[in-house]
Length: 261
Ligand SMILES: NC(=O)c1ccc[n+]([C@@H]2O[C@H](COP(=O)([O-])OP(=O)(O)OC[C@H]3O[C@@H](n4cnc5c(N)ncnc54)[C@H](OP(=O)(O)O)[C@@H]3O)[C@@H](O)[C@H]2O)c1
Image (cartoon, rainbow, N blue to C red; front, side, top):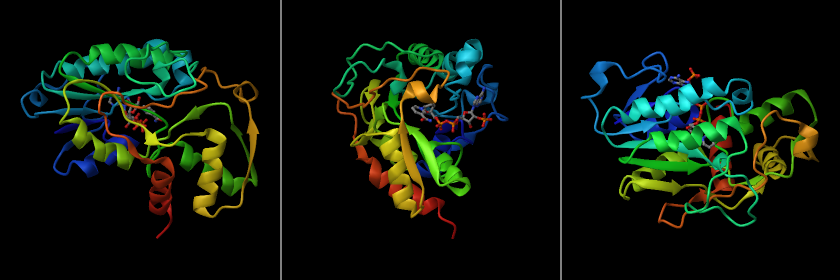
């Protein structure tokens, strides 16, 4: 098993869920280039977690995002072995008000979402394309870490309350990949059970961490992010993809792991 993006939050979790897998950081393989020649014969499956994940940054450099997400996935597929490619709820436009299933038509609102949709195609025929949402874990830059960092500096944070999703704990997602590998190739939605807005999620972060910080609910328009995000992007599987445990359980595990000592 080969794990790309091994320094990222999902890559780290995959290395724990697949003991013995070989992790590749950007220093080992910059996926915008074809793989180093010795990799092609060494592995039986690739868990491709390397990606451009700066959603707002992709608006300024869509070609850079495409080089990593589309080119990188194509290069991973060119290894000629079965591939797990990770994709996103941001391939949808968020106009639905019931969960998105695999047969729903994508319509990305952002350069990042477009790059990930093209990346799905670049994964080829021998791939499991795993769409997931709102990843958080014990390493890297993510919403949970950001909220706890802000709470150390202030007693109120402003968080958008008009984007609803099902945030997935990387530990739960990585474990569920064992089940995905038993399914036929194709697209699968893997999200946490339950759903919430980012403001609701922030309140839960502070409650779980025992931190005293208020959440002021604002709109996406007030927040003014560069990239447009879907207002509703809860994912569910109609194809037998596993549902992850509830996001609140994932959050509890994550906060426990982040706690000092
Ligand atoms: N984060 C989310 O909320 C979310 C939601 C839905 C889907 N996903 C998808 O889930 C997957 C994993 O995301 P994540 O949250 O684990 O992201 P992450 O923490 O940002 O990790 C991405 C990893 O990819 C590496 N990388 C970037 N460019 C590279 C390149 N040219 N060559 C090799 N490695 C490169 C990064 O290395 P550096 O540290 O050196 O940049 C980083 O280690 C991605 O496919 C992402 O699109 C994420």
